[in-house]
Image (tube, rainbow, N blue to C red):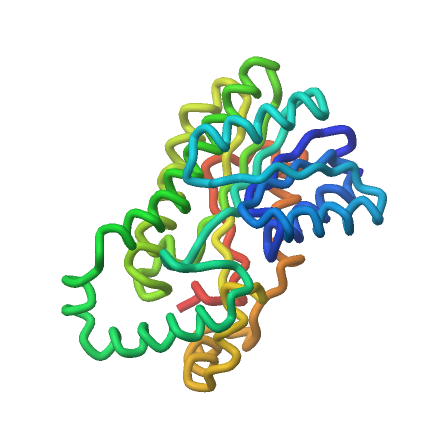
Length: 275
């Protein structure tokens, strides 16, 4: 019960990594607020966690909206009386991404294959709307969530903890599309800058940069032999990770076991960065 009676907000908490973190934190005694764009998935996750005895509520979240992030923070305070932990797991890989949309993702992967044949033209022709959507959700959305959390933590004098979800793409430009890699590199720099500014207020900020994890965002890779083989060739452990393995790292970063850590990034990636 490392998080007993603490209030944790998880953006993107209805699926994948965010969902696994919400469950792990709840099992450790935290009161959970899940924010997600997909209300149906969010309510289903809440119902399942409640069955497991976890105190949890759901608020629909548009990650790229400041107002929506402020409303989610208010929900945490009004429902549970505080705000101790934030995890920013909301994110998209490309502008048309919808979690669980297998057909849409397969279509996108086909387009990526075509773009790989002419990368210079793909870069030159990237539409600003597609670029902005990814940056708005992944980077600006992370900033909005962090800002909303920080305001409540400062008001309450909380020993706050923030965990951002970056990616191996934060450090490797070949680990995703251009807007995605830039957004995740931005999340990592934002983490470091916020850690320096918030440390005097006793708020710790760290990041996790997962490798290839079994989620809706990566499961479609398994259906394309060439893509699966190419990706797994980069992972010395030879497998994708599980969301629960990321949740373990996320628990460490908000527990007392990491009390002297801020501005750091952990890479649960099966050895990806050993090259």
